[in-house]
Image (cartoon, rainbow, N blue to C red; front, top):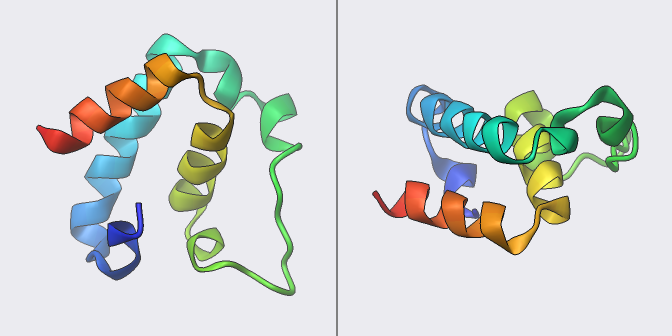
Length: 79
């Protein structure tokens, strides 16, 4: 996931949208407002991925994802 840090936004956004679609189709509960409200966000000490809303959503959702979702994302990223 560190590769996203230096990746151009024009390349990164379609990849992140694909990951979001995978999560939404397979474990939509990870993308609910209630779940997102539990994700860490500190506006005074932003981690590098918290500066991009899509990265923030993907990274936090994947932290709660089960192994099936993680394997799907891994396969998606490898293809």
